[in-house]
Image (cartoon, rainbow, N blue to C red):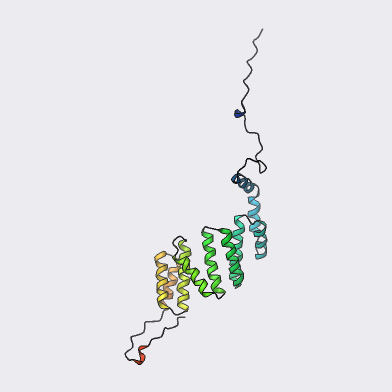
Length: 215
């Protein structure tokens, strides 16, 4: 009579593979898990929809449909840029403010802040726009590219206003931040366009000097 084979010991629950279907309905999932699953299922669809949004109206619709997605913030930035390029300063100001709120932080936020400053200048809010540029230019936590461009724009504004000392000050700021920047060549041109210093007056009548207006 043959000896029966020894039965295998039953596997414990821990030895068995997890056969639970893990999807967005699985209650033990963390927020990060759900976000990962959502991106795996919908990421390419959202990217495709963003790529197809080629007009401001379509970008607006995309941003509204995907309000919680990062690309919605990028869409708002594009909308603001297009409004600024079209000279629609009020819409641009509003658009950049919305983009900043959606982006919260990062290089694109700095980019939106710079756009907001320029849109305010375009809207005739010179004091607000200048103050915003100054804040960006001197904030060492901002990216160098943003600081350099803000400094150049300040130098350009000073040139238009005929403020030679400010042109030199902001030009120096550009060169200190990034001497290899393309904006450095532009500030050299601004400085070259400054009027030559006038000789000191030799009479009491000619002793009063008035600032020249730069072009």
